[in-house]
Image (cartoon, rainbow, N blue to C red; front, side, top):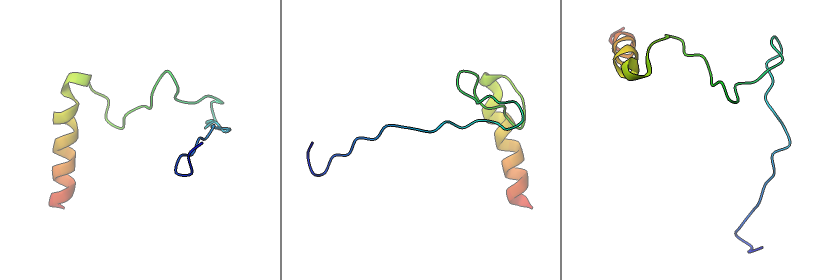
Length: 53
């Protein structure tokens, strides 16, 4: 190995204590469910409202 190169191997896995599963293969559930094609509009409006106070 080169002195400026590092290799790592993951040894842990995130597990939900309630369901005993993780998000691998299924993804994380969004806070505001919507179609993938509409996500920008659904995310933009609440973000602007929060910024406006």
